[in-house]
Length: 365
Ligand code: ATP
Ligand code: MG
Ligand code: MG
Image (spheres, rainbow, N blue to C red):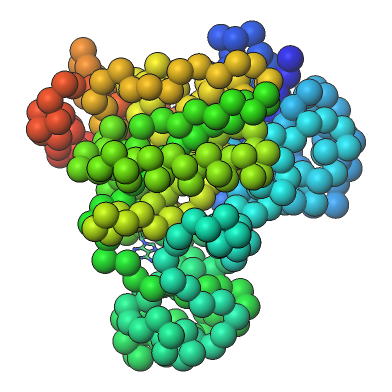
């Protein structure tokens, strides 16, 4: 069986690296998305370039006629995905990808299912948004946002005046700033036969909107909160008849959980599962989209994941008996995600201190 992946980044790379041992073949669509570096998928299967207006049948041929196509990102050309649906199965389904592509459709989906998120306004003036939400608020473009790009924190009328020229009403939403205690995420997976499984929750630390560190299983959450997150995830997977991995980012505010956003794909906050879970998110996504039985999602230890942002070369010195390195083979640029290291240790305090000392030793560009 061949699986086509739209996108050629590190997520496509790690999905293929997880699926190859299962005897699956891969091919990749190079659609010129932001931050593409074809060297990520070098040697893993054919890469077919694609631009709007080109023949989709020719693309499908160039991909080696995969039985299934999946995505490594939500920012895909939906017309392309819909046209590919005439040739093979798309997993997750196009409607799920489309809903996660636009922040407003995503919020509407959450509202329909009774899943809480941060208060927001849409399609009103910035002044009206500020009246409704008060400062600080965060303005987010409806799509084309990742790693905190295309968002603006507005703390005052002056800030409002300075961001206004970037924004066209109806093309963004404004969200109340949530003074969260922590950020967590949950990765869930639904198989083609409808079975659902969730990984333990992950604690995430961001800097300037970019994920830097994750720890799993997340600390300090009550059993009820974990169950709540699992029930939101299960509801979404079932309502959308979703097949594959779905990621949900959440804010923890006291004993409440508010959804920040969804990603219809494998997710950076699930990279720890490569070392710390019985089956990693990449293998489970591939098993799901290939119509195979899922693997167990339970944690086998306490794991930390450190993103290698703008690190000039693979930090081989960080390797040790409890640490594993995943290098993406991309050209180094400041703040770019170039790899990550997973660490596993029984003791959280020791895990944090090991991660800190590796982080301090990294040489960045
Ligand atoms: P990703 O790379 O995860 O897709 P993104 O560009 O889609 O990121 P968000 O997840 O919406 O961006 O926001 C990035 C980060 O900014 C969040 O993880 C959080 O730290 C902060 N943030 C976003 N929205 C809010 C909010 N309403 N209140 C407080 N912090 C926020
Ligand atoms: Mg996002
Ligand atoms: Mg996010």
